[in-house]
Image: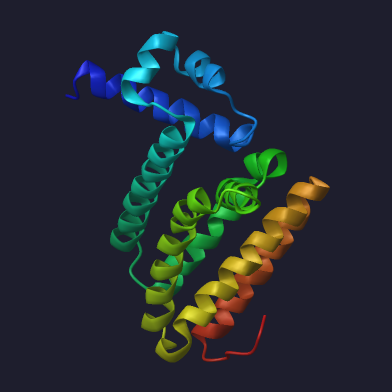
Length: 196
């Protein structure tokens, strides 16, 4: 069982992670994190000297969770097409959050990319972990020469769907576009590599 100090640090990181998604990194204050984590303000400085340090820990936390999720998918789904379909299920499984806040990875990268390049380089890893995993799936599906291209295309489609579903607050649009992606993946699995 983690020590109390580790549990407190984790509570701060999880609270900050939620706030950075819901409010945005720049709109979240140290005080917001302190309040959401339920720790005395002075205690937070024992763990983190700056908000940037909290964000770096939140990004590592997200990366760890994503890695665990992808490992679980590798163990639970036998074929690459099943794993690819599981990936696009994120769209419908997260529809309420997407309608309200957008994509957690996309919104963070967009916000930081405006004028916080060093932080955005770290946040970019949230996409890279999926890009690598998706490339592996497409390579296993028989598209080794185009695996990275297809991974980026799928991620670009997903991000576009997220943005438009968020802008229009339209879960029906999100469902329709997810079904379109599913058909495209099935066509790829059948050897038809035409563009979606």
